[in-house]
Length: 365
Image (cartoon, one colour):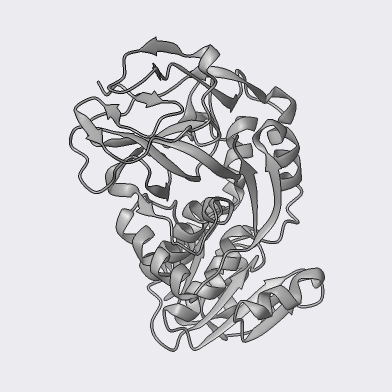
């Protein structure tokens, strides 16, 4: 067990189990009245026992979301305890809240949503070697359920990366899930090759906005972005060579034009898109319509074209690559709107509309 001692109002030492740091101790925003007193090497301190979090005790509409006190997680030997400064809302969060993923998330409550974390390390497990208290980090929880929409979260050391210096916490919180999805979908599933013609459906969304940029970074010869009429200039500014208004142009009618169709919007299908793919073309989606799965799979079995469905995997090395691209300006973050964590229900409603350009970020006090 890792005990987290956090000292207030001093510039001495902080103690985290057997880890001692001479860095100045910071007030990470704890409410002392809610914490159980513990000893400290230099002054009055407290052991973190409770935190503020967004959570729900049953599946349902946005109204089931609550904001209140829950136990602070305790990091294991290979984990970091992170004071969350910003998080985000992804479609998977409200789908989980509505119960659409209950076959994976189960019926154990309360559940804390959220897949994206940006914050500061406050404690480390005994086996952690790359990170120390005070480091600015970002990543995703590894439990497959969430947990990021809270004051504290535990992250596996192998999945975490340092936040690029040029990024704020709010910008960093928009990165992990969306950027990992775009990178792994294009590089690993679509196996993007230099010179490939790539179409990104939903190019102005959280995943799509990264996919346009990452496709270019991976060497795509031509990137076509599909978006609504209000986001044409945004997609063009991200580096798209062609931008299509989905209300005026049906990309599935572009016969044999694309090597890769990356459907970040989940609005199409392999069967509908097959004619637009060139020989040995690849169709990739992260949000398939369940009614199309069997039909798409059967159609691909008798075609030289392939269909791929996947969920992004936690990867510290991929996060490090994304960090380099962000620091050098190869890719950039698009934030549509920011909400305080206490207004998570409104943030979920906004995300469910499907009209956001870029990511929706939650700030955590």
